[in-house]
Length: 191
Length: 102
Image 1 (tube, each protein chain N blue to C red):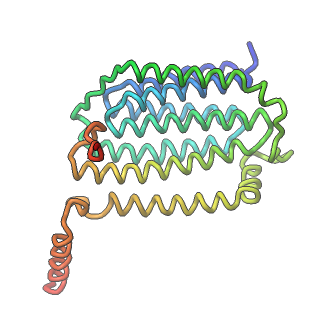
Image 2: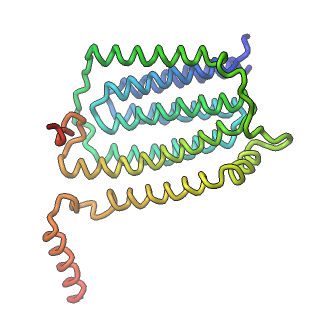
Image 3: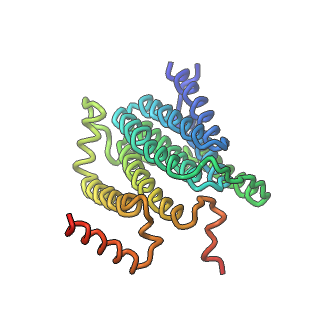
């Protein structure tokens, strides 16, 4: 049963992500990537990482996909960007890297004989509860740092993308921005 | 039916990583390049969760969480930068980003 599920979702994920990489249409690439992300979460459920699977669905197909959809609508993606790059150097580099990865993976069990669990799964506890226990004891500091990083990313996103969507602050000179502010204050006074 | 072991998941993760690598190498459209980088991060997440599961350890899942957090902020900041670049140059072609060429 587990084998059937694994092979089914493996084939689906590989097919979806291949389409994402190969498609020339941004909309199709985006849709197939969203589907592939959901298929990935199936592996997390198979691996008893329930909480991770739910987070995967919420963060990737919820938040990240919405951002990409926004970007796709903002940019003119109908204008085709040529992507025919069949350089032999790139093909060679890719194949060498992929081979190295495969070799590393198949020699891993030899090197991994003496690995023991640093934070073993607590017995008799559901996965989300176990994750909570470990996350808020052993990984509290990285968790807080990640929270600060997300805050910084949010502010950066607002500052870079959100301000004055109709006119580009980054393109304008300092004097033009000052003029704009003056105009706005004058408007307020007249009102 | 054969039992699914750690190697199965690691091979799957390699295949996904190779797909993402191909995407990063061949894309000229920056938005599509970001999508390929998401595939790379997801491939690594699968490997983390699988190794954690087969060693009975939660550290793999913890790492996957932090990778997801980093991926989310990467998209937010990267898309912001991309919007600024689009406003300035009216294109998202990677080959136009050559202002630092000597």
